[in-house]
Amino acid sequence: MSKISESLFVTEIQQHQGIIHKVCNMYCDDAEDRKDLFQEILLQLWRAFPSFRQEAKMTTWMYRVALNTAISRLRKQKRKPENTALSISELQIADTPIDTEKEEQLVQMHKAIAQLNKIEKAIMMLYLEDKSYDEIAEIIGITKNHVGVKINRIKIKLKSQLEAQNI
Amino acid sequence: MNLDDFKSSWKVYNAHTIDQLKVGKEQIKQMLAGKTQDIVSKIQRNIRYELVVNYVFFILLSIGYFFYPTHITSDPAERNVLYAIWIFVLVTSTVYYALKYHQISQIKHSSETLKVRIKSIVDTMQKYLKIYLYFSLAIVPITIFGLIIASTDSNAKSSLLAWIVIIGITCVTVAIVYVFTQWYINKVYGNYVKGLKSCLHELSENEDAPL
Image (cartoon, rainbow over all chains, first blue to last red; front, top):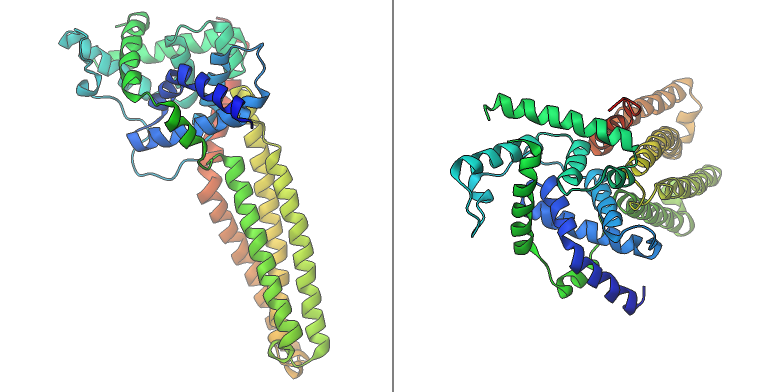
């Protein structure tokens, strides 16, 4: 690809890289894994960039490629468990006053989300990002009705997990 | 804490962590020079390596055939049969590699929707792994049979017992190849395809269920 399109691509990625980081955080256990997935998503986006049509939103297209890459990648066999949740220290955000009880609730919520399967994680992430049902349907490839059914089920699942943890 | 309350905390948390993880233009450019680990590229790379190994092996055999013929077998007729078997193996495997390569390139790109992409990987991988198993079952015994014939003494070959042993070894080889290939496929791709099948099931179930 030409230098102009590379430069355009890099600018777009720099502007929207948050999407890739969010997907990596959702699907990776450690920093090294996150770095590998970040690069893989970047390469897949770069490969798909020439076929990107402007009628779709750049962010929708990026979510699609990023989630596809994260979910369909062939991972190296690891002994570590796939679902790891964040600890309180990882959740502590500087300059953000959050009381201890809320912090604990946040950790439990992250833990509960980490227990979801890959598809549920994808839908939940898009839901938490305030994506419309239409946009979620466009990214995942299911009907708007099915998105609603899924979200309701995930909510129930999370609620029962949190109740089991006495939150 | 319900999900809607969690949304705002999620956004604050992400904004903070992403700020720490942000990469610059130069880093992005460097990453673009890397090699993809995507399933399609990975398998296509393996196919290319296997094809090269196949041709190198054939070249070595051709050197033996033309320059050191008696090292292979003293009987010229047997030598020709053996060489013909190798040419057959080479041509067949080239067609097989081309077929595999084409098969894998049918997988939809990651810019498709999640469901389309996963379905495409599952369907293609199932066909690909079947081709892999059947080809291994067919080609390895032919090769082993050729090698045994070439390395067996002409007098020994006239006895019935020798043929029973040759056929027996070939049958055992087929069984070993079957078990090994199944084990290998399962080890490398088994869990992967199984995981994607469960994702696909998750995307397909009760699609029209009421809200």
